[in-house]
Length: 262
Image 1 (cartoon, helix red, strand yellow):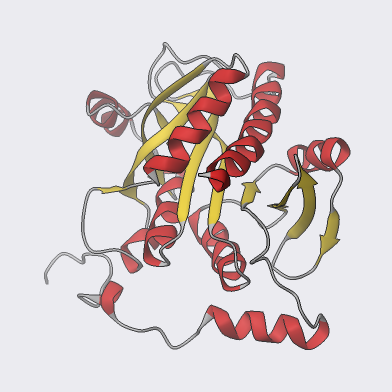
Image 2 (spheres, helix red, strand yellow; image 1 turned 60 degrees about the horizontal axis):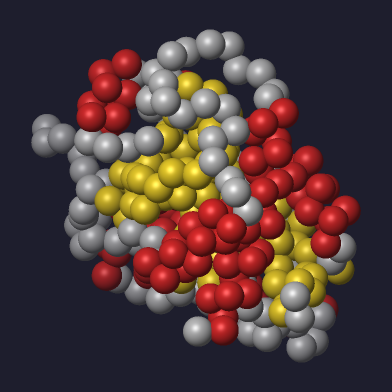
């Protein structure tokens, strides 16, 4: 028996799918006529409920039930933006809600999450702008042809890095390892991917980048280091990580507004 390769059906990424996210948008409009995000400059995806709560407390936002999650529509620096959380962790959860956002009109997205460091030089609270994501997930292979990495939008990534630098953030740029199996991360993988230049291990970036490329929208990612796989200690909530996530959301909103002006 040959070794299975994802996806099991060869060339799947180029085939049309039966479910269409446009069906979701049409369904939403049966109960909310005129529902659209085409007049919004972008969306920020967050994964921790407390980060969404902090964002709402600082930026406000009208809640809608247009997607599978807690979607908030807000105005920031004269621009309309969206922030979405409460939809779960991992590439499949992020991809599902991103497909729905895109079907409603979103053309730019920044994903803001946590990650584990692959290097001892990255302490909790460090921020990493992901310049490409190693595809060790399952979802990205259903969207893009075989390749080691999924890539973000260079332009939106540049705006995100600039917005973080303007806020004096402790930020680095580099590739990340995306995996769906957080309790199966092994020492040989950490050593290998770290040697290849990956700075972090996370769950969503490759999936978000793959959906964005497939749907021809812009995506970028920033990850706050929460713990380490290179120097393992029991994970605990760290105030620097929390503060870094708040800075990351602020920078993501700023990046979406400046990218729109180009």
